[in-house]
Amino acid sequence: MKSLTAKEEELMTYFWNKGPLFVREILSFYEEPKPHFNTLSTIVRGLEDKGYLGHKTFGKTYQYYPLIEKEEYSKKSLKNVISKYFDNSYLSAVSCLVSEEKISIEELQELIHKVTHTH
Image 1 (tube, rainbow, N blue to C red):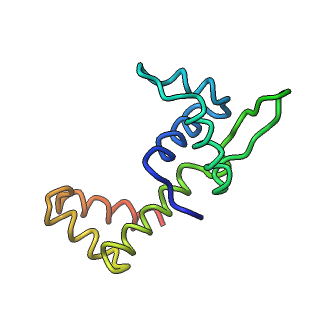
Image 2: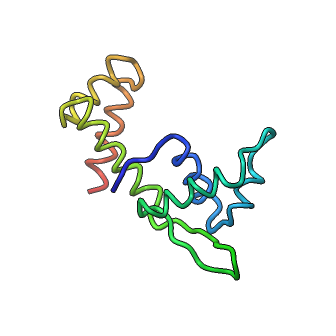
């Protein structure tokens, strides 16, 4: 599965939050100045080419829908980050979060407690 650009990820968020959409509907979610319809259409077709979206035909227009769940994408993205920046070490990633004070020792202990008592 190919990774997404920031714009592609932004569009996928609309599909994950709202379900099947026409390109004109996506356009309505943007504030002025809105992106051009053709620009959004090109990005959506790119997402389809990458296997993230499918479509149903309605006359001359397409309604697109996600083929990949957000959770699946999130897990894949996390694996890629840990692989790329932490040499495939989840321990290094967690250690970084603790040392940067993004997660406290208490929160880590609470997480360990939750995990060990739900399995």
